[in-house]
Image (cartoon, rainbow, N blue to C red; front, side, top):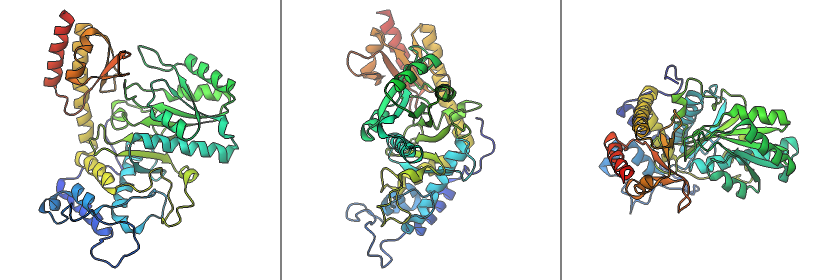
Length: 417
Protein backbone atom coordinates (compact mmCIF):
# COMPACT_ATOMS: atom_id res chain seq x y z
CA UNK A 1 0.00 0.00 0.00
CA UNK A 2 1.73 3.12 -1.22
CA UNK A 3 0.34 6.12 0.68
CA UNK A 4 -2.09 8.13 -1.42
CA UNK A 5 -5.40 9.40 -0.08
CA UNK A 6 -5.95 9.32 3.66
CA UNK A 7 -9.06 10.64 5.38
CA UNK A 8 -7.86 10.97 8.97
CA UNK A 9 -4.09 10.48 8.96
CA UNK A 10 -2.31 13.80 8.50
CA UNK A 11 1.30 14.79 9.07
CA UNK A 12 1.57 17.56 11.70
CA UNK A 13 4.55 19.60 12.84
CA UNK A 14 5.63 19.62 16.51
CA UNK A 15 3.85 22.88 17.27
CA UNK A 16 0.57 21.64 15.79
CA UNK A 17 0.85 18.48 17.88
CA UNK A 18 1.58 20.47 21.07
CA UNK A 19 -1.39 22.75 20.45
CA UNK A 20 -3.75 19.86 19.72
CA UNK A 21 -2.81 17.94 22.87
CA UNK A 22 -2.82 21.08 25.02
CA UNK A 23 -6.33 21.94 23.85
CA UNK A 24 -7.49 18.38 24.46
CA UNK A 25 -6.15 18.47 28.01
CA UNK A 26 -7.93 21.79 28.57
CA UNK A 27 -11.14 20.07 27.51
CA UNK A 28 -10.55 17.41 30.17
CA UNK A 29 -11.40 17.97 33.81
CA UNK A 30 -8.90 20.06 35.77
CA UNK A 31 -8.89 18.54 39.25
CA UNK A 32 -7.31 21.67 40.78
CA UNK A 33 -9.74 24.24 39.39
CA UNK A 34 -13.27 22.96 39.95
CA UNK A 35 -15.69 21.79 42.63
CA UNK A 36 -15.87 18.13 41.61
CA UNK A 37 -15.90 15.79 44.58
CA UNK A 38 -17.46 12.61 43.18
CA UNK A 39 -14.89 11.45 40.63
CA UNK A 40 -12.64 8.57 41.82
CA UNK A 41 -9.67 9.99 39.94
CA UNK A 42 -7.06 12.72 40.19
CA UNK A 43 -3.83 13.95 38.61
CA UNK A 44 -0.59 12.19 39.48
CA UNK A 45 0.52 12.73 43.08
CA UNK A 46 2.19 16.20 43.13
CA UNK A 47 4.51 15.22 45.97
CA UNK A 48 6.16 12.77 43.60
CA UNK A 49 5.37 14.16 40.13
CA UNK A 50 5.91 17.91 39.80
CA UNK A 51 3.00 19.14 37.73
CA UNK A 52 4.48 22.60 37.07
CA UNK A 53 7.85 21.44 35.76
CA UNK A 54 8.96 23.70 32.87
CA UNK A 55 9.68 20.67 30.69
CA UNK A 56 5.96 19.88 30.55
CA UNK A 57 5.28 22.98 28.47
CA UNK A 58 6.92 21.38 25.43
CA UNK A 59 6.22 17.75 26.28
CA UNK A 60 2.59 16.88 25.43
CA UNK A 61 2.91 13.18 26.27
CA UNK A 62 4.45 13.87 29.69
CA UNK A 63 1.75 16.48 30.29
CA UNK A 64 -0.86 13.84 29.49
CA UNK A 65 0.73 11.45 31.97
CA UNK A 66 0.68 14.04 34.73
CA UNK A 67 -2.92 15.08 33.98
CA UNK A 68 -3.77 11.35 34.17
CA UNK A 69 -6.89 11.00 31.96
CA UNK A 70 -8.85 7.79 32.52
CA UNK A 71 -10.19 6.43 29.22
CA UNK A 72 -12.49 3.82 30.71
CA UNK A 73 -15.03 2.56 28.17
CA UNK A 74 -15.15 2.47 24.38
CA UNK A 75 -15.45 6.01 23.08
CA UNK A 76 -16.51 5.13 19.54
CA UNK A 77 -19.86 3.78 20.84
CA UNK A 78 -21.40 7.12 21.85
CA UNK A 79 -21.64 8.34 25.44
CA UNK A 80 -18.43 8.32 27.50
CA UNK A 81 -17.26 9.82 30.76
CA UNK A 82 -17.43 13.60 30.14
CA UNK A 83 -14.50 14.40 32.43
CA UNK A 84 -11.93 13.33 29.80
CA UNK A 85 -13.70 14.21 26.56
CA UNK A 86 -10.70 16.11 25.14
CA UNK A 87 -8.26 13.23 25.04
CA UNK A 88 -11.07 10.76 24.26
CA UNK A 89 -11.51 12.63 20.99
CA UNK A 90 -7.84 12.04 20.18
CA UNK A 91 -8.37 8.32 20.84
CA UNK A 92 -11.41 8.29 18.54
CA UNK A 93 -9.34 9.90 15.79
CA UNK A 94 -6.59 7.33 16.33
CA UNK A 95 -9.11 4.50 15.97
CA UNK A 96 -10.28 5.91 12.63
CA UNK A 97 -6.70 6.31 11.39
CA UNK A 98 -6.05 2.65 12.14
CA UNK A 99 -9.37 1.21 10.99
CA UNK A 100 -10.08 3.35 7.92
CA UNK A 101 -6.76 4.69 6.67
CA UNK A 102 -4.56 1.67 7.43
CA UNK A 103 -7.02 -1.23 7.34
CA UNK A 104 -9.49 -0.11 4.71
CA UNK A 105 -12.72 0.20 6.69
CA UNK A 106 -15.32 2.65 5.46
CA UNK A 107 -15.21 5.78 7.66
CA UNK A 108 -17.41 5.55 10.71
CA UNK A 109 -17.99 1.80 10.47
CA UNK A 110 -15.57 0.67 13.19
CA UNK A 111 -15.40 0.62 16.95
CA UNK A 112 -12.30 0.17 19.03
CA UNK A 113 -10.11 1.28 21.87
CA UNK A 114 -6.50 1.48 23.02
CA UNK A 115 -5.94 -1.66 25.08
CA UNK A 116 -3.09 -2.74 27.35
CA UNK A 117 -1.50 -4.73 24.53
CA UNK A 118 -2.08 -7.27 21.80
CA UNK A 119 -2.89 -9.99 24.31
CA UNK A 120 -5.83 -8.06 25.70
CA UNK A 121 -7.07 -7.16 22.23
CA UNK A 122 -6.99 -10.81 21.12
CA UNK A 123 -8.89 -11.90 24.22
CA UNK A 124 -11.40 -9.09 23.66
CA UNK A 125 -12.16 -10.42 20.17
CA UNK A 126 -12.57 -14.03 21.25
CA UNK A 127 -14.77 -12.92 24.18
CA UNK A 128 -17.03 -11.03 21.77
CA UNK A 129 -17.42 -13.96 19.37
CA UNK A 130 -18.04 -16.48 22.11
CA UNK A 131 -20.95 -14.34 23.31
CA UNK A 132 -22.14 -13.70 19.75
CA UNK A 133 -22.47 -17.42 19.03
CA UNK A 134 -24.26 -18.05 22.31
CA UNK A 135 -26.71 -15.15 22.04
CA UNK A 136 -27.38 -15.03 18.30
CA UNK A 137 -27.05 -18.67 17.22
CA UNK A 138 -27.97 -20.47 20.42
CA UNK A 139 -24.60 -22.17 20.69
CA UNK A 140 -23.76 -24.21 23.75
CA UNK A 141 -20.57 -23.16 25.42
CA UNK A 142 -18.79 -26.43 24.67
CA UNK A 143 -19.73 -26.24 20.98
CA UNK A 144 -17.45 -23.23 20.35
CA UNK A 145 -13.79 -23.61 19.40
CA UNK A 146 -10.84 -21.31 18.66
CA UNK A 147 -9.11 -22.23 15.38
CA UNK A 148 -5.66 -20.83 14.62
CA UNK A 149 -2.27 -21.84 13.27
CA UNK A 150 0.40 -23.65 15.25
CA UNK A 151 2.55 -20.49 14.96
CA UNK A 152 -0.09 -18.32 16.67
CA UNK A 153 0.69 -16.18 19.70
CA UNK A 154 0.31 -17.70 23.16
CA UNK A 155 -2.47 -15.23 23.95
CA UNK A 156 -4.83 -17.61 22.13
CA UNK A 157 -4.20 -20.16 24.86
CA UNK A 158 -4.76 -17.50 27.52
CA UNK A 159 -8.10 -16.69 25.89
CA UNK A 160 -9.06 -20.35 25.72
CA UNK A 161 -8.25 -20.77 29.41
CA UNK A 162 -9.99 -17.60 30.60
CA UNK A 163 -13.09 -18.08 28.44
CA UNK A 164 -13.29 -21.85 28.98
CA UNK A 165 -13.00 -22.64 25.28
CA UNK A 166 -11.13 -25.39 23.48
CA UNK A 167 -8.51 -24.58 20.86
CA UNK A 168 -7.59 -26.41 17.66
CA UNK A 169 -4.27 -25.74 15.90
CA UNK A 170 -3.72 -25.93 12.15
CA UNK A 171 -0.25 -27.24 11.36
CA UNK A 172 2.05 -25.09 9.19
CA UNK A 173 4.81 -26.08 6.79
CA UNK A 174 8.23 -26.35 8.41
CA UNK A 175 9.97 -24.22 5.81
CA UNK A 176 7.22 -21.92 4.48
CA UNK A 177 5.21 -21.53 7.75
CA UNK A 178 1.93 -21.68 5.79
CA UNK A 179 -1.35 -23.38 6.56
CA UNK A 180 -2.72 -25.42 3.66
CA UNK A 181 -6.13 -26.69 2.64
CA UNK A 182 -5.13 -30.21 3.69
CA UNK A 183 -3.87 -29.24 7.16
CA UNK A 184 -7.00 -27.15 7.65
CA UNK A 185 -9.18 -30.11 6.60
CA UNK A 186 -7.48 -32.26 9.22
CA UNK A 187 -8.15 -29.63 11.89
CA UNK A 188 -11.80 -29.34 10.80
CA UNK A 189 -12.19 -33.11 11.02
CA UNK A 190 -10.87 -32.98 14.59
CA UNK A 191 -13.26 -30.15 15.40
CA UNK A 192 -16.26 -32.12 14.18
CA UNK A 193 -15.20 -35.27 16.01
CA UNK A 194 -15.13 -33.24 19.22
CA UNK A 195 -18.66 -31.95 18.64
CA UNK A 196 -17.67 -28.36 17.87
CA UNK A 197 -20.11 -26.45 15.66
CA UNK A 198 -19.05 -22.77 15.88
CA UNK A 199 -15.57 -21.49 15.06
CA UNK A 200 -13.62 -18.43 16.18
CA UNK A 201 -10.81 -18.09 13.63
CA UNK A 202 -7.67 -16.11 14.46
CA UNK A 203 -5.61 -15.40 11.34
CA UNK A 204 -2.09 -14.03 11.68
CA UNK A 205 -0.81 -10.83 10.11
CA UNK A 206 2.87 -11.63 10.81
CA UNK A 207 3.48 -14.07 13.65
CA UNK A 208 5.73 -13.00 16.50
CA UNK A 209 8.34 -15.69 15.91
CA UNK A 210 8.49 -15.91 12.12
CA UNK A 211 6.66 -12.91 10.69
CA UNK A 212 4.56 -15.43 8.73
CA UNK A 213 1.17 -14.44 7.34
CA UNK A 214 -2.00 -16.53 7.02
CA UNK A 215 -4.23 -16.54 3.95
CA UNK A 216 -7.74 -15.81 5.27
CA UNK A 217 -9.34 -17.27 2.16
CA UNK A 218 -7.98 -20.71 3.11
CA UNK A 219 -9.86 -20.53 6.40
CA UNK A 220 -13.02 -19.08 4.86
CA UNK A 221 -13.33 -21.56 1.99
CA UNK A 222 -12.53 -24.56 4.20
CA UNK A 223 -15.05 -23.66 6.89
CA UNK A 224 -17.75 -22.74 4.38
CA UNK A 225 -17.28 -26.08 2.64
CA UNK A 226 -17.60 -27.81 6.02
CA UNK A 227 -20.78 -25.87 6.82
CA UNK A 228 -19.35 -24.40 10.04
CA UNK A 229 -20.38 -20.87 11.07
CA UNK A 230 -17.34 -18.75 11.91
CA UNK A 231 -16.13 -15.30 12.91
CA UNK A 232 -12.63 -14.25 11.88
CA UNK A 233 -10.26 -12.09 13.90
CA UNK A 234 -6.84 -10.95 12.68
CA UNK A 235 -3.91 -10.88 15.06
CA UNK A 236 -1.87 -8.02 13.63
CA UNK A 237 -0.16 -7.28 16.93
CA UNK A 238 3.21 -7.48 15.27
CA UNK A 239 2.53 -6.77 11.61
CA UNK A 240 -0.39 -4.36 11.68
CA UNK A 241 1.72 -1.22 11.31
CA UNK A 242 4.05 -2.77 8.71
CA UNK A 243 2.41 -5.44 6.56
CA UNK A 244 -0.39 -3.25 5.06
CA UNK A 245 2.29 -0.95 3.64
CA UNK A 246 4.26 -3.80 2.09
CA UNK A 247 1.57 -5.30 -0.14
CA UNK A 248 -0.59 -3.92 -2.94
CA UNK A 249 -3.75 -5.57 -1.57
CA UNK A 250 -3.96 -6.52 2.09
CA UNK A 251 -6.49 -9.36 2.34
CA UNK A 252 -6.22 -9.21 6.14
CA UNK A 253 -8.08 -5.91 6.30
CA UNK A 254 -11.63 -4.69 6.75
CA UNK A 255 -12.02 -4.74 2.97
CA UNK A 256 -12.32 -8.50 3.38
CA UNK A 257 -15.95 -9.22 4.37
CA UNK A 258 -14.89 -12.33 6.31
CA UNK A 259 -12.83 -10.29 8.78
CA UNK A 260 -14.68 -8.75 11.71
CA UNK A 261 -11.91 -7.48 13.99
CA UNK A 262 -8.18 -6.76 14.12
CA UNK A 263 -5.55 -6.46 16.83
CA UNK A 264 -2.72 -3.95 16.47
CA UNK A 265 0.15 -3.33 18.86
CA UNK A 266 1.75 0.10 19.02
CA UNK A 267 4.47 -0.74 21.52
CA UNK A 268 6.39 -2.77 18.96
CA UNK A 269 7.10 -1.16 15.59
CA UNK A 270 5.45 2.15 16.50
CA UNK A 271 7.76 2.45 19.54
CA UNK A 272 4.99 3.72 21.81
CA UNK A 273 5.17 3.09 25.58
CA UNK A 274 4.61 -0.50 26.60
CA UNK A 275 1.01 -1.28 27.44
CA UNK A 276 -0.34 0.10 24.15
CA UNK A 277 -2.36 -2.32 22.04
CA UNK A 278 -5.30 -1.44 19.82
CA UNK A 279 -8.54 -3.38 19.33
CA UNK A 280 -10.64 -2.68 16.24
CA UNK A 281 -14.00 -4.21 15.31
CA UNK A 282 -16.85 -3.66 12.93
CA UNK A 283 -19.79 -1.69 14.30
CA UNK A 284 -22.37 -3.77 16.11
CA UNK A 285 -20.02 -6.24 17.81
CA UNK A 286 -19.00 -4.46 21.02
CA UNK A 287 -22.53 -4.85 22.39
CA UNK A 288 -21.86 -8.54 23.03
CA UNK A 289 -19.52 -7.63 25.90
CA UNK A 290 -21.22 -4.44 27.11
CA UNK A 291 -21.35 -4.58 30.90
CA UNK A 292 -24.77 -3.54 32.19
CA UNK A 293 -23.48 -3.64 35.76
CA UNK A 294 -21.14 -0.66 35.09
CA UNK A 295 -24.02 1.75 35.73
CA UNK A 296 -21.78 4.39 37.33
CA UNK A 297 -19.76 4.64 34.08
CA UNK A 298 -21.41 6.94 31.53
CA UNK A 299 -21.92 4.86 28.40
CA UNK A 300 -21.19 1.69 30.42
CA UNK A 301 -18.07 -0.34 29.62
CA UNK A 302 -17.40 -2.90 26.89
CA UNK A 303 -13.64 -3.30 27.33
CA UNK A 304 -11.67 -6.02 29.05
CA UNK A 305 -9.36 -3.64 30.91
CA UNK A 306 -11.83 -1.01 32.11
CA UNK A 307 -9.83 1.94 33.42
CA UNK A 308 -6.80 2.72 31.28
CA UNK A 309 -4.41 5.58 30.66
CA UNK A 310 -5.47 8.11 28.06
CA UNK A 311 -1.82 9.16 27.78
CA UNK A 312 -1.04 6.03 25.78
CA UNK A 313 -3.62 6.92 23.16
CA UNK A 314 -2.11 10.40 22.98
CA UNK A 315 1.36 8.88 22.50
CA UNK A 316 0.33 6.73 19.52
CA UNK A 317 -1.58 9.60 17.92
CA UNK A 318 1.49 11.83 18.35
CA UNK A 319 3.82 9.30 16.72
CA UNK A 320 1.59 8.68 13.71
CA UNK A 321 0.91 12.42 13.32
CA UNK A 322 4.62 13.20 13.45
CA UNK A 323 5.41 10.84 10.57
CA UNK A 324 2.25 11.09 8.51
CA UNK A 325 1.47 8.26 6.08
CA UNK A 326 4.34 9.04 3.71
CA UNK A 327 6.88 9.32 6.50
CA UNK A 328 5.62 6.05 7.98
CA UNK A 329 5.96 4.30 4.62
CA UNK A 330 9.53 5.59 4.33
CA UNK A 331 10.40 4.44 7.86
CA UNK A 332 9.10 0.96 7.10
CA UNK A 333 10.96 0.81 3.81
CA UNK A 334 14.23 1.49 5.64
CA UNK A 335 13.60 -1.48 7.92
CA UNK A 336 12.84 -3.66 4.91
CA UNK A 337 16.01 -2.59 3.10
CA UNK A 338 18.12 -3.55 6.11
CA UNK A 339 16.31 -6.87 6.39
CA UNK A 340 16.84 -7.67 2.71
CA UNK A 341 20.51 -6.65 2.98
CA UNK A 342 21.02 -9.18 5.77
CA UNK A 343 19.13 -11.92 3.86
CA UNK A 344 21.36 -11.46 0.82
CA UNK A 345 24.44 -12.02 2.93
CA UNK A 346 22.95 -15.02 4.68
CA UNK A 347 22.25 -16.47 1.24
CA UNK A 348 25.91 -15.96 0.32
CA UNK A 349 26.89 -17.85 3.48
CA UNK A 350 24.32 -20.57 2.75
CA UNK A 351 22.82 -20.13 6.21
CA UNK A 352 19.25 -21.54 6.32
CA UNK A 353 16.54 -19.15 7.48
CA UNK A 354 12.88 -18.24 7.02
CA UNK A 355 11.72 -14.78 6.05
CA UNK A 356 8.37 -13.59 4.82
CA UNK A 357 9.31 -11.14 2.04
CA UNK A 358 7.02 -8.50 3.54
CA UNK A 359 8.38 -8.82 7.09
CA UNK A 360 11.36 -7.46 9.00
CA UNK A 361 11.89 -10.72 10.90
CA UNK A 362 14.55 -13.26 9.93
CA UNK A 363 14.38 -16.61 11.74
CA UNK A 364 17.56 -18.66 11.57
CA UNK A 365 17.55 -22.43 11.64
CA UNK A 366 19.54 -23.59 14.65
CA UNK A 367 23.19 -24.60 14.26
CA UNK A 368 26.30 -24.53 16.42
CA UNK A 369 27.39 -21.30 14.77
CA UNK A 370 24.05 -19.64 15.45
CA UNK A 371 23.84 -20.94 19.02
CA UNK A 372 27.26 -19.50 19.80
CA UNK A 373 25.90 -15.98 19.12
CA UNK A 374 22.61 -16.21 20.98
CA UNK A 375 23.66 -14.52 24.22
CA UNK A 376 25.86 -11.81 22.69
CA UNK A 377 23.30 -10.67 20.12
CA UNK A 378 20.12 -11.48 22.04
CA UNK A 379 18.73 -13.88 19.46
CA UNK A 380 15.30 -15.06 20.57
CA UNK A 381 14.51 -18.81 20.41
CA UNK A 382 11.23 -20.42 19.50
CA UNK A 383 11.63 -22.40 22.74
CA UNK A 384 14.04 -21.64 25.57
CA UNK A 385 16.41 -24.41 26.54
CA UNK A 386 17.87 -27.21 24.45
CA UNK A 387 14.68 -27.65 22.42
CA UNK A 388 15.09 -24.51 20.30
CA UNK A 389 14.91 -25.12 16.55
CA UNK A 390 14.87 -21.49 15.42
CA UNK A 391 16.37 -18.17 16.55
CA UNK A 392 15.02 -14.86 15.32
CA UNK A 393 16.46 -11.48 14.41
CA UNK A 394 14.05 -8.54 14.40
CA UNK A 395 15.22 -5.52 12.41
CA UNK A 396 13.90 -2.69 14.54
CA UNK A 397 14.80 0.99 14.39
CA UNK A 398 17.94 0.52 16.50
CA UNK A 399 19.20 -2.46 14.46
CA UNK A 400 21.58 -0.63 12.15
CA UNK A 401 23.65 -2.02 9.30
CA UNK A 402 26.73 -1.65 11.51
CA UNK A 403 25.19 -3.99 14.09
CA UNK A 404 24.12 -6.45 11.43
CA UNK A 405 27.58 -6.37 9.85
CA UNK A 406 29.17 -7.16 13.22
CA UNK A 407 26.79 -10.08 13.63
CA UNK A 408 27.71 -11.39 10.17
CA UNK A 409 31.43 -11.23 10.91
CA UNK A 410 30.95 -13.28 14.07
CA UNK A 411 28.68 -15.72 12.24
CA UNK A 412 31.36 -16.24 9.57
CA UNK A 413 33.91 -17.03 12.28
CA UNK A 414 31.54 -19.58 13.78
CA UNK A 415 30.92 -21.21 10.42
CA UNK A 416 34.67 -21.64 9.86
CA UNK A 417 35.17 -23.49 13.15
